[in-house]
Amino acid sequence: MLDVLETDTAFAGPRSIDAIPAAAGIGLRAAHYDDFLAMAPEVAWVEVHSENLFAAGGKVHRVMEQVRRDYPLSLHGVGLSLGSADPLNLDHLRQLKRVIQHYAPGLVSEHLCWISVGGRYLHDLFPLPGTESMLAHLVPRIQQVQEVLGCQILIENVSAYLRFSGETLPEWAMLNALVEKTGCGLLLDINNLFVSSRNQHFDPHVYLANLHREAVQEIHLAGFSVEEVEGTTVLVDTHSCPVWPEVWDLYARSLRMFDHRVPTLIEWDSDLPNLDILLGEAAEAQRLLENAHG
Figure 1 (cartoon, rainbow, N blue to C red):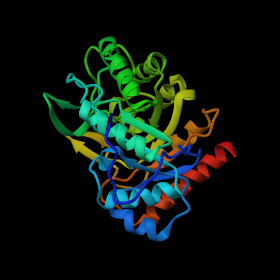
Figure 2 (figure 1 turned 90 degrees about the vertical axis):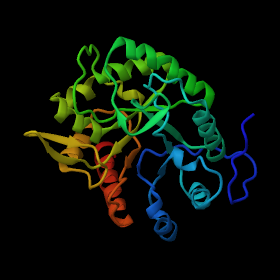
Figure 3 (figure 1 turned 135 degrees about the horizontal axis):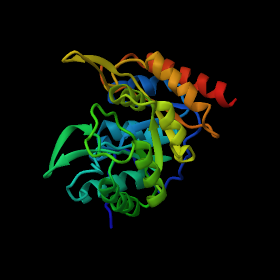
């Protein structure tokens, strides 16, 4: 039996799940909590990092109780390390399940990556090689996660900077196979796709054309940085600036390839701007969504 999540706000009975609307939302970070509650902006939905809710009590839960009353909520994880050679962290899963049971999010997502080795956690999301052996490693782990949590999870593509030798599967094929074999959904990060396509020199439109687009239940947009490394231009997924025009263009093109409107989130994790700038980015995403699907 999982412990009840302790918060500073009384909460009686199970919540109903509020579906994430097919509209634009924002990733809510601690620096924006006070302004967000004061403004009560007309944004369609909110996403937070799951791990920020693991600790009991404190301001984060006071804020999230109010946010959850007023907005549909999505949980986005960074710590499951689905591709690691380490066993799944069952304590992490138990904490995540408590949070899911308490807040009843409309969507739960994680990354197609590894971040831990030998029980030590790193501070980045590392991509995985596209191989049949990696696919065979991921399938039972994702199945176990969904069984423990009691819900479907969405898997997100991460940014990549180099190609692995010996790869036999493009990323879109890996994601498609995971959908088919585990019943998971997909979170398509358009910024990550653009960054990877430039760094690895592939056509993102071919990726989108081959992806199981019907499985995509959420889209992410964010900013990247440009670095020069030994004479080579590298795009780095930093989430520290506005969405680049090239990413907006890829997003607009991708929307026309979908038969359904997809909830879209603006992520901004470092060098945070004023909240109104973040909301302005969400307004642009909403405009493009409406232009594509009415």
